[in-house]
Image 1: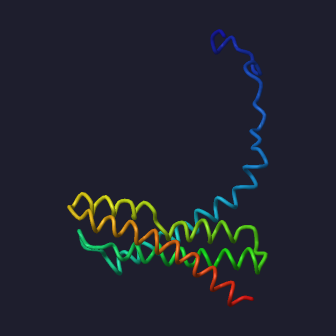
Image 2 (image 1 turned 135 degrees about the vertical axis):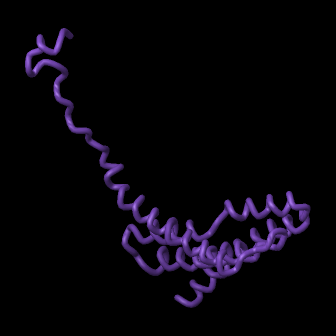
Image 3 (image 1 turned 30 degrees about the vertical axis):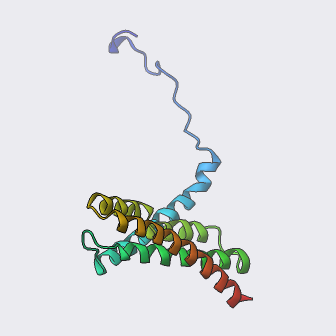
Length: 153
């Protein structure tokens, strides 16, 4: 390489060509952005629900159950509307379905609630909550989808 004095201007590695991102990544940027925005909005709504209706330690986590059941009901209605009634903009489903409703509903809090109940000596309550949430979520999405179909046809 030599000393700096011995280098001639222009020596060295050739300039790099600009990095070209694949078209797939450029096309997905708006999708990722709306999912992030929707997720932030949904998570804030869930956090607000937890602040308005806190769950005492060792108590049945009604707030998380209600949030998950409500979120599943909205998912059921939303999916019927956007797949059977409307042809929405391509970013509506990622924003609202994945982002807002994904941020609003919460599997992680559900799992932590079960663990806290079980670790706190409330194993029966933890099992009841586990089953009730699963049942409420499934019934909510099914009932909302069925009701939406009935109202729209």
